[in-house]
Length: 480
Ligand code: FAD
Image 1 (tube, rainbow, N blue to C red):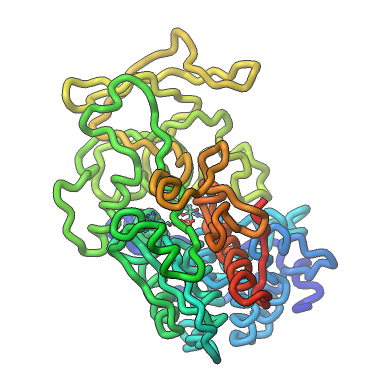
Image 2 (image 1 turned 180 degrees about the horizontal axis):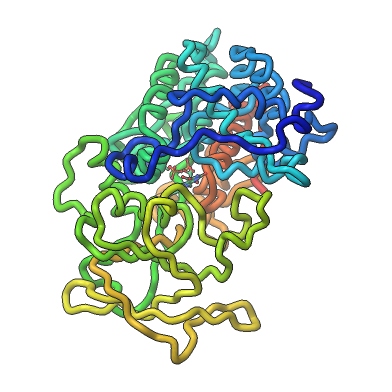
């Protein structure tokens, strides 16, 4: 244990400040100031870890991150050992250390009577320091098995599965329909939360290890699922949950009403210097975002940086975030507003707001909204007599995702689905077609990066066992 009295000496969290709002709104760079600002308090924060007899943070994290161990190593300044312990359970701490809602911190035992240890900031500091010191090197397999695996989808689930399987000696190709690898990390999450350099340097490591990348190939169209299955010894479906939940109200077809990912995909492409024709932009517009989760807050930060005239976020949630207890840094109720850096930057938020109609001739001009009423059976409905209109030139629907796109999967491969429309799977990530596995949001439904990485690792273990008869790869989670 690092410092037996650390949590008694330092009783508060200390984090590097975010860059000032007026500065960061002028660019797309990370809102956080991590290494560049220096963190003299990092050692003290790591020293606050009590190394509990039962470290609940292990269970709080789907990856089973060995948090007390690397807190101790950071306290001792042993960066090389710290990154080894972190990489032992997490392929991509540079992603989770930046954008995970950190269920580990909600599970920190210290949180019972003190603010939780700053686990997420310690995690990102370890991996940033490791890259800066040249400690992240390719782990090339010692021998090849001769088995081939196709991973379809290059989000965190697909990448984690691909890295594990490549390191186990299999020959792995990752297929991605977008022009660049990364899934939602590339074209969903904006640079101000996750700069793309973090994806690119990890991809360079994976390429050096032997993983092959096939961007610009849509499986089901450019090559059929059946062809892929015949060509490879195993297939991992990691295609995400990409079907947006629509809002079925009058006026939905008006110009200016978009699902959030249309907007965010284009904004991320432009931020990467790619040409986008007729970009959907918030510049000079009254923007209304429907939905108060991660996607909604990413739309907010993006719209503010594009120069929106106003941004209003509507959510049906009934409790404002300040009702959370002070020691609980993350929202636990999915209908609450997410509280992200974007909310420090501007925009209005309206709770208990139900959209009744989009109003306009050809283009949307206004939104008719009403207060949300909670019925005794739990249903939420617009409350009679509370309707009013708000101006809107651009509406972004950020109400989540219902599941994966499945017509080609079912037609070409005969994959069976759950009643929710997700890819059906056994506990160990096998689908109903032998040799075909599933990981991440495609099987789990919309979730989090940390779950996608955990499932990618676990699915890789199942594939390895299928191909080799046994496996030494870790399986941090089961599918059920
Ligand atoms: P994805 O990341 O969705 O990747 C799937 C990939 O498969 C995509 O690139 C897609 O193009 C590709 N694909 C689909 N079909 C095919 C096909 N037929 N052929 C080839 N390629 C195909 N989670 C957090 O933990 N923290 C956050 O801050 C956060 N912010 C988010 C912000 C937004 C805007 C969104 C939408 C989600 C956010 N999430 C966040 C959720 C997180 O991004 C997802 O849970 C995670 O990316 C899922 O990983 P995945 O690998 O399963 O799928």
